[in-house]
Length: 461
Image 1 (spheres, rainbow, N blue to C red):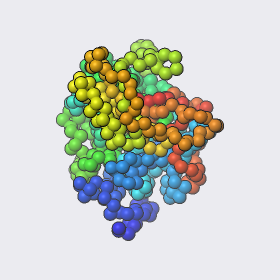
Image 2 (cartoon, rainbow, N blue to C red):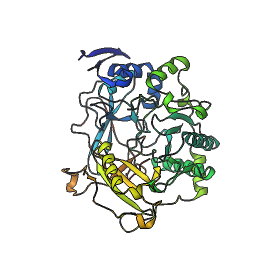
Image 3 (cartoon, rainbow, N blue to C red):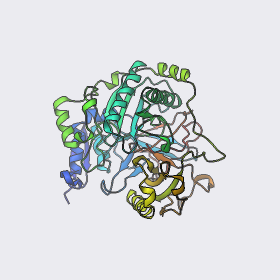
Image 4 (cartoon, rainbow, N blue to C red):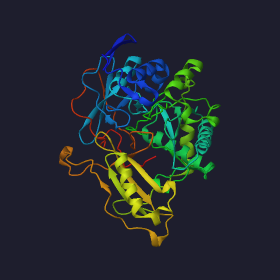
């Protein structure tokens, strides 16, 4: 194992431990290579994360193992990394990392972060987002070209309502469209504006796009407006994703969008692209716009359709069976294969979008739920709900603040994001200087305290 690597970055000294640790073995890329990548594209990467609270998504055992999500910044962080405190209804709080320069990027990568996951606000005002985020999340089987067509429609909607739209690949299956906004609207209003974009996109291309919240009711490309929430984070521009080919969430020009392919944007190719053309998002910070027009359209459209509710839990409108709840995706898929083996007559009727894989937020890491929508299976062949193939309880042994016996409602996360929530904050969380982070392990996503945004159940994108 190589000795630690000491770098002098932005006037600070940063130590990279285990610099020769393989991160992307198929490409021969190490931890040191990932640090050097972020330093090379730092100007662009910092446009997405500078001054924002950021979840530390740490792959301490490599990209083939589950990451854990660290909300609380380490106590022994360097003086060039700040924190901002987020407070929750249970009485817990978390002081998240805030980086300002390239040294902060290198520090995060040294901790095991591969991609960077900032909130849609700046740390000096957590009540008012400064960007609106649209996440285009395809259901399985959706052609890539359809995603791009929906992205172009989303651009048109944003531009027609006075906002500059900025496109980037997600580095995963989807696509992102961002818009910088004036910092005068609360989260509730920003979410309404984003939902209005989704509804208008769906109205214009109903065969391609959907704004339906419940996953089993979607088709084509889900225009995910729920990324606009207090505790939601998304992989930012120039983030390297934990894929074997080291794909990058890459900023594009709109002229590039129709012919782009996500596999073309990898760590090595983005370095070459940066050297050749620089950052297509260089003007993003100067493109701040107003939500007024979108909020006017929201009033014209009227309230969005709400999911059907029964007594207690929602009324399920599709014939769903749950297959597995597992700690890892591999375990969940193994359970699905056992279920498939027992029901070959059912499997032949299933379509790709009928298998619902939900990535759920636990205390500090993801867990996985698999359900099957039997809507295309003849009624006489539909199996009843059976005991789960894998039955993992992510909350086992957890002691809840205030003596609660049960956890708050579980959140489901998009394939591109790490967090979500709803409703507006009513009190500004506090900004904390370096060196004062609270001790304790990373806690789960919890219900915000009065004066902070209140979260609710989420759906997979």
